[in-house]
Image (cartoon, rainbow, N blue to C red; front, side, top):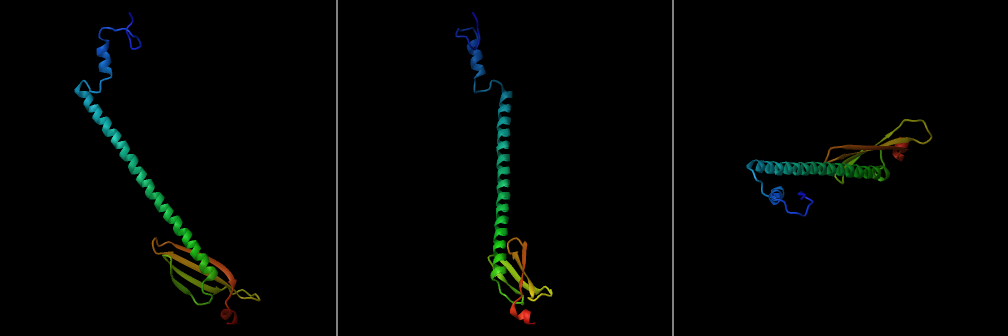
Length: 146
């Protein structure tokens, strides 16, 4: 008679071995400590994963806010350069969470038409970052006459 896990025959002592192998209750007090340590290790792994996920989420949120700020600053800069006040006097103000300044200065080049450098500077009220853009265009009539 062959006794083993795959055999269908009843072997003396086989039932006791099978019950001990698949028992949900540990048979000795040393195994209780292993179950507790396993649970603690699993809990630590899960808590570490949650902490790392929260950190990654916060960094992604900061990157998204920075990208949004850059986009809004670029839009405001282009609007200021395209349709801001056209004079030689410096202009400044606040809009959309930014403080802005617009300066127009002559380049001093000898051309039939006076060319001015027009520079816009915006500073974010939230982060304190500054963004700038500049262009060259014909000077306003008051500067060309002077």
